[in-house]
Amino acid sequence: MSTALFDLTGKVALVTGATHGIGMALATGFARAGAKICVNDISDEKLDACRKEYAARGIEAYTLNFDVTSEADVDRGISKVEEAVGPIDILVNNAGIIKRVPILDMKVEDYRLVIEVDLVAPFIVSRRVARKMIEQRSGKIINMCSMMSVYGRQNVSAYASAKGGLKLLTQNMCCEWAKYNLQVNGIGPGYIATAQTEPIRIDGHPFNNLVMTRTPAGRWGEPEDLVGAALLLASKAGDYINGQVIYVDGGILANFGYVEGENKVS
Image 1 (cartoon, rainbow, N blue to C red):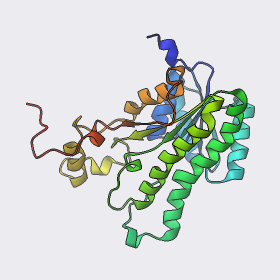
Image 2 (cartoon, rainbow, N blue to C red):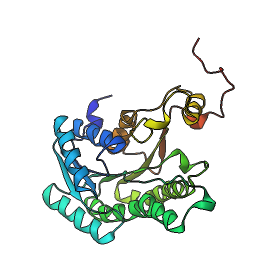
Image 3 (cartoon, one colour):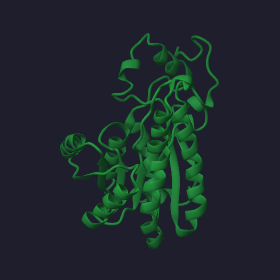
Image 4 (cartoon, rainbow, N blue to C red):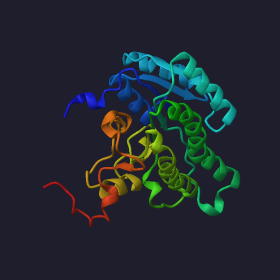
Protein backbone atom coordinates (compact mmCIF):
# COMPACT_ATOMS: atom_id res chain seq x y z
CA MET A 1 0.00 0.00 0.00
CA SER A 2 1.35 3.42 -0.94
CA THR A 3 2.13 5.88 1.85
CA ALA A 4 0.47 8.50 -0.39
CA LEU A 5 -2.82 7.34 1.12
CA PHE A 6 -1.71 8.89 4.41
CA ASP A 7 -0.17 12.05 2.93
CA LEU A 8 -1.62 15.29 4.34
CA THR A 9 0.45 17.73 2.31
CA GLY A 10 -1.38 21.05 1.94
CA LYS A 11 -4.16 20.13 4.36
CA VAL A 12 -5.10 22.50 7.18
CA ALA A 13 -5.69 20.78 10.52
CA LEU A 14 -7.19 22.35 13.63
CA VAL A 15 -6.57 20.36 16.81
CA THR A 16 -8.35 22.02 19.72
CA GLY A 17 -6.48 22.20 23.00
CA ALA A 18 -3.32 20.73 21.45
CA THR A 19 -0.92 22.59 23.75
CA HIS A 20 0.30 19.36 25.37
CA GLY A 21 -0.29 15.64 25.74
CA ILE A 22 -2.47 13.72 23.30
CA GLY A 23 -3.44 16.77 21.26
CA MET A 24 0.18 17.78 20.73
CA ALA A 25 1.10 14.23 19.70
CA LEU A 26 -1.69 14.19 17.09
CA ALA A 27 -0.84 17.64 15.76
CA THR A 28 2.83 16.65 15.51
CA GLY A 29 1.87 13.51 13.58
CA PHE A 30 -0.27 15.54 11.17
CA ALA A 31 2.53 18.07 10.64
CA ARG A 32 5.04 15.33 9.86
CA ALA A 33 2.55 13.99 7.29
CA GLY A 34 2.53 17.41 5.61
CA ALA A 35 -0.38 19.27 7.20
CA LYS A 36 -0.46 22.88 8.35
CA ILE A 37 -1.21 22.86 12.08
CA CYS A 38 -3.54 25.17 13.99
CA VAL A 39 -3.89 25.01 17.77
CA ASN A 40 -6.21 26.87 20.13
CA ASP A 41 -6.47 27.29 23.88
CA ILE A 42 -7.88 29.83 26.34
CA SER A 43 -4.46 30.43 27.92
CA ASP A 44 -1.98 32.71 26.13
CA GLU A 45 0.75 31.32 28.38
CA LYS A 46 0.06 27.75 27.22
CA LEU A 47 -0.12 28.87 23.59
CA ASP A 48 3.25 30.63 23.84
CA ALA A 49 4.85 27.58 25.45
CA CYS A 50 3.40 25.13 22.92
CA ARG A 51 4.44 27.29 19.97
CA LYS A 52 8.03 27.06 21.23
CA GLU A 53 7.71 23.30 21.73
CA TYR A 54 6.36 22.81 18.20
CA ALA A 55 9.18 24.98 16.84
CA ALA A 56 11.70 22.80 18.69
CA ARG A 57 10.18 19.87 16.80
CA GLY A 58 10.63 21.71 13.50
CA ILE A 59 6.93 22.53 13.20
CA GLU A 60 5.38 25.94 12.57
CA ALA A 61 2.08 26.01 14.44
CA TYR A 62 -0.55 28.71 14.02
CA THR A 63 -1.91 29.38 17.50
CA LEU A 64 -4.85 31.46 18.64
CA ASN A 65 -6.92 32.04 21.74
CA PHE A 66 -10.60 31.18 21.62
CA ASP A 67 -13.09 29.42 23.88
CA VAL A 68 -14.59 26.28 22.33
CA THR A 69 -17.71 26.60 24.51
CA SER A 70 -18.61 30.03 23.10
CA GLU A 71 -20.36 30.07 19.73
CA ALA A 72 -19.33 33.67 19.06
CA ASP A 73 -15.72 33.05 20.07
CA VAL A 74 -15.54 29.90 17.93
CA ASP A 75 -16.87 31.80 14.92
CA ARG A 76 -14.27 34.53 15.45
CA GLY A 77 -11.46 32.01 15.90
CA ILE A 78 -12.35 29.83 12.92
CA SER A 79 -12.69 32.92 10.74
CA LYS A 80 -9.16 33.94 11.71
CA VAL A 81 -7.84 30.46 10.84
CA GLU A 82 -9.57 30.56 7.46
CA GLU A 83 -8.15 34.00 6.70
CA ALA A 84 -4.60 33.34 7.93
CA VAL A 85 -4.07 29.69 6.99
CA GLY A 86 -6.99 28.54 4.84
CA PRO A 87 -10.20 26.50 5.08
CA ILE A 88 -9.98 23.71 7.64
CA ASP A 89 -9.71 20.24 6.09
CA ILE A 90 -9.22 18.29 9.33
CA LEU A 91 -10.80 19.04 12.70
CA VAL A 92 -9.89 17.18 15.88
CA ASN A 93 -12.15 17.99 18.83
CA ASN A 94 -9.53 17.27 21.46
CA ALA A 95 -10.11 19.95 24.12
CA GLY A 96 -11.63 18.43 27.23
CA ILE A 97 -11.78 18.35 31.01
CA ILE A 98 -12.65 15.81 33.70
CA LYS A 99 -13.84 16.19 37.28
CA ARG A 100 -13.50 13.13 39.50
CA VAL A 101 -16.27 13.60 42.05
CA PRO A 102 -18.90 11.15 43.37
CA ILE A 103 -22.39 11.85 42.04
CA LEU A 104 -23.79 12.76 45.44
CA ASP A 105 -20.99 15.28 46.01
CA MET A 106 -20.82 16.83 42.54
CA LYS A 107 -22.15 20.35 42.15
CA VAL A 108 -24.60 20.80 39.29
CA GLU A 109 -22.51 23.65 37.88
CA ASP A 110 -19.46 21.37 37.73
CA TYR A 111 -21.46 18.66 35.97
CA ARG A 112 -22.70 21.22 33.44
CA LEU A 113 -19.18 22.57 32.87
CA VAL A 114 -17.87 19.12 31.89
CA ILE A 115 -20.82 18.60 29.54
CA GLU A 116 -20.22 22.05 28.01
CA VAL A 117 -16.52 21.45 27.32
CA ASP A 118 -16.60 17.76 26.41
CA LEU A 119 -19.89 17.53 24.48
CA VAL A 120 -21.41 20.90 23.61
CA ALA A 121 -18.08 22.35 22.43
CA PRO A 122 -17.51 19.61 19.79
CA PHE A 123 -21.05 20.34 18.56
CA ILE A 124 -20.29 24.08 18.30
CA VAL A 125 -16.87 23.76 16.66
CA SER A 126 -17.89 20.96 14.28
CA ARG A 127 -20.99 22.80 13.11
CA ARG A 128 -18.96 25.94 12.33
CA VAL A 129 -16.21 24.03 10.50
CA ALA A 130 -18.60 21.68 8.69
CA ARG A 131 -20.33 24.50 6.82
CA LYS A 132 -17.18 25.19 4.78
CA MET A 133 -16.39 21.47 4.47
CA ILE A 134 -19.85 20.88 3.01
CA GLU A 135 -19.27 23.66 0.48
CA GLN A 136 -15.99 22.00 -0.51
CA ARG A 137 -17.55 18.52 -0.46
CA SER A 138 -14.59 17.32 1.58
CA GLY A 139 -13.65 17.16 5.25
CA LYS A 140 -12.51 15.04 8.17
CA ILE A 141 -13.77 15.43 11.73
CA ILE A 142 -12.30 13.38 14.58
CA ASN A 143 -13.92 13.51 18.00
CA MET A 144 -11.81 12.41 20.93
CA CYS A 145 -14.06 9.95 22.69
CA SER A 146 -13.07 7.61 25.51
CA MET A 147 -13.49 4.16 26.93
CA MET A 148 -16.06 5.99 29.06
CA SER A 149 -18.08 6.29 25.85
CA VAL A 150 -19.09 2.66 26.43
CA TYR A 151 -18.74 1.93 30.13
CA GLY A 152 -18.83 3.70 33.47
CA ARG A 153 -16.53 4.05 36.45
CA GLN A 154 -16.83 5.53 39.89
CA ASN A 155 -16.55 9.30 40.24
CA VAL A 156 -16.60 10.22 36.53
CA SER A 157 -20.35 10.58 35.91
CA ALA A 158 -20.09 13.91 34.08
CA TYR A 159 -17.16 12.82 31.92
CA ALA A 160 -18.79 9.49 31.03
CA SER A 161 -22.08 11.23 30.23
CA ALA A 162 -20.28 13.64 27.90
CA LYS A 163 -18.15 11.00 26.19
CA GLY A 164 -21.11 8.64 25.77
CA GLY A 165 -23.01 11.51 24.18
CA LEU A 166 -20.02 12.36 21.98
CA LYS A 167 -20.01 8.85 20.54
CA LEU A 168 -23.65 9.25 19.49
CA LEU A 169 -23.05 12.79 18.26
CA THR A 170 -20.28 11.39 16.07
CA GLN A 171 -22.70 8.87 14.58
CA ASN A 172 -25.36 11.52 14.00
CA MET A 173 -22.88 13.84 12.28
CA CYS A 174 -22.02 10.94 10.00
CA CYS A 175 -25.70 10.34 9.25
CA GLU A 176 -26.24 13.97 8.24
CA TRP A 177 -22.93 14.87 6.57
CA ALA A 178 -21.60 11.73 4.87
CA LYS A 179 -23.58 12.58 1.74
CA TYR A 180 -21.38 15.68 1.40
CA ASN A 181 -18.19 13.57 1.52
CA LEU A 182 -17.43 14.37 5.15
CA GLN A 183 -16.02 11.58 7.28
CA VAL A 184 -16.80 11.92 10.99
CA ASN A 185 -15.24 9.43 13.38
CA GLY A 186 -13.95 9.15 16.90
CA ILE A 187 -10.90 7.85 18.73
CA GLY A 188 -11.30 6.27 22.15
CA PRO A 189 -7.97 6.33 24.01
CA GLY A 190 -7.20 3.80 26.69
CA TYR A 191 -5.20 4.78 29.74
CA ILE A 192 -2.45 7.04 28.41
CA ALA A 193 0.78 8.12 30.11
CA THR A 194 0.56 11.91 30.33
CA ALA A 195 1.55 14.53 32.86
CA GLN A 196 -1.95 14.29 34.33
CA THR A 197 -1.66 10.55 34.99
CA GLU A 198 1.94 10.60 36.24
CA PRO A 199 1.02 10.62 39.97
CA ILE A 200 -1.06 7.43 39.61
CA ARG A 201 1.38 5.54 37.39
CA ILE A 202 3.82 4.65 40.15
CA ASP A 203 4.27 1.02 41.15
CA GLY A 204 1.97 0.09 43.98
CA HIS A 205 -0.65 2.73 43.26
CA PRO A 206 -4.06 0.99 43.14
CA PHE A 207 -5.04 2.59 39.82
CA ASN A 208 -1.72 1.67 38.22
CA ASN A 209 -2.30 -1.89 39.38
CA LEU A 210 -5.78 -1.82 37.83
CA VAL A 211 -4.46 -0.62 34.46
CA MET A 212 -1.61 -3.12 34.41
CA THR A 213 -3.84 -6.08 35.29
CA ARG A 214 -6.76 -5.15 32.99
CA THR A 215 -4.77 -4.17 29.89
CA PRO A 216 -3.72 -7.17 27.75
CA ALA A 217 -0.80 -5.17 26.34
CA GLY A 218 0.53 -4.95 29.90
CA ARG A 219 1.43 -1.27 29.76
CA TRP A 220 0.09 2.26 29.73
CA GLY A 221 -0.35 3.80 26.30
CA GLU A 222 1.76 6.70 25.07
CA PRO A 223 0.25 9.75 23.33
CA GLU A 224 2.12 8.71 20.18
CA ASP A 225 0.20 5.41 20.16
CA LEU A 226 -2.84 7.38 18.99
CA VAL A 227 -1.16 8.98 15.97
CA GLY A 228 -1.64 6.04 13.61
CA ALA A 229 -5.40 5.92 14.12
CA ALA A 230 -5.61 9.69 13.73
CA LEU A 231 -3.64 9.63 10.47
CA LEU A 232 -5.90 6.89 9.14
CA LEU A 233 -9.04 8.90 9.92
CA ALA A 234 -7.58 12.21 8.70
CA SER A 235 -6.28 10.96 5.35
CA LYS A 236 -7.49 9.47 2.07
CA ALA A 237 -6.86 6.04 3.61
CA GLY A 238 -9.97 6.56 5.75
CA ASP A 239 -12.33 7.83 3.06
CA TYR A 240 -14.85 5.00 3.56
CA ILE A 241 -14.66 4.90 7.36
CA ASN A 242 -17.55 6.87 8.81
CA GLY A 243 -19.45 7.07 12.09
CA GLN A 244 -16.99 4.80 13.90
CA VAL A 245 -15.04 5.05 17.13
CA ILE A 246 -11.63 3.37 17.04
CA TYR A 247 -10.50 2.33 20.51
CA VAL A 248 -6.74 2.58 20.98
CA ASP A 249 -6.58 0.97 24.39
CA GLY A 250 -4.11 -1.93 24.41
CA GLY A 251 -7.05 -4.34 24.36
CA ILE A 252 -8.66 -3.32 27.64
CA LEU A 253 -12.20 -3.17 26.25
CA ALA A 254 -11.80 -6.70 24.88
CA ASN A 255 -10.85 -8.07 28.27
CA PHE A 256 -13.06 -8.99 31.22
CA GLY A 257 -9.96 -9.20 33.40
CA TYR A 258 -7.23 -11.56 34.61
CA VAL A 259 -6.73 -13.41 37.83
CA GLU A 260 -3.48 -12.51 39.56
CA GLY A 261 -0.43 -13.58 37.56
CA GLU A 262 -2.42 -14.87 34.58
CA ASN A 263 -1.05 -12.34 32.05
CA LYS A 264 2.60 -12.37 33.09
CA VAL A 265 5.20 -13.02 30.40
CA SER A 266 7.09 -16.21 31.24
